[in-house]
Length: 181
Image (tube, rainbow, N blue to C red; front, top):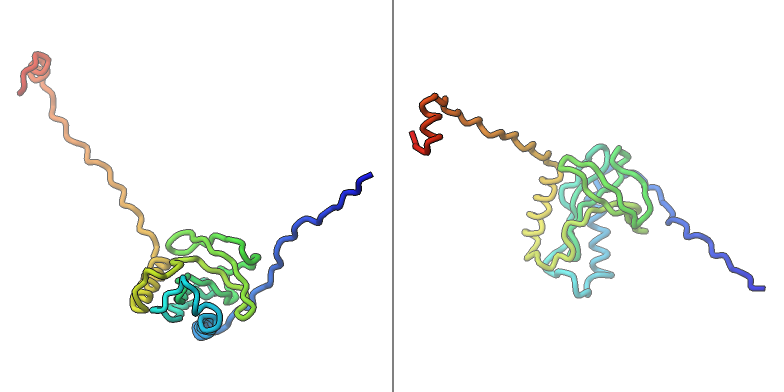
């Protein structure tokens, strides 16, 4: 008799609830990613040494923090819990779709031991094609402008009805005979 070994079903990854940030997360995120850059990412082949670390435009949206983080290896739109309506705890690696003024964007959940749970929408990775920080800042500013811009409704254009010339009896018979007016 052969005994079957049952393997437990894979459990979903645990969800660590986010602790809402009361204050602007800019300095905290910059310090974290600078540390990552100096300790773990500095010598990797896909980084752009012309770039540094900077958090751009973090502002509250629906009570949570939304902004762009530039690093030598990515440029991402980041969502950080601020205790508002936009945030939702989901397992790391899961995706969710958020309705923003520009439309719906996909965010990926992550959970860093140092900064806690956050969600990001990848904008550019790798960032090897960005020439310098000035260009990276322009891209970040354009991304934020786009995210918070409401799409313009396309004007409804209907073709003007062409006025049909009144057909006279004489004109009808001339066309029937193949003659032009």
